Length: 47
Image (cartoon, rainbow, N blue to C red; front, side):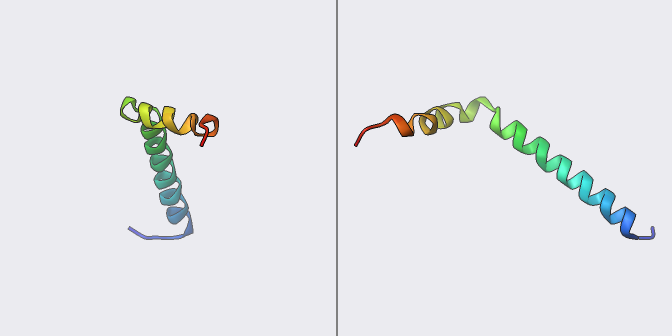
């Protein structure tokens, strides 16, 4: 298999897409809901 610039670009695109999908799955997982709710309410907490 010969590596040229187009192969490198394709590989970078695939890796970026997989990373994007991973971030979407992490952001919408139910396991993180409580942490995100707590972070969303931080500006409203008083000292």
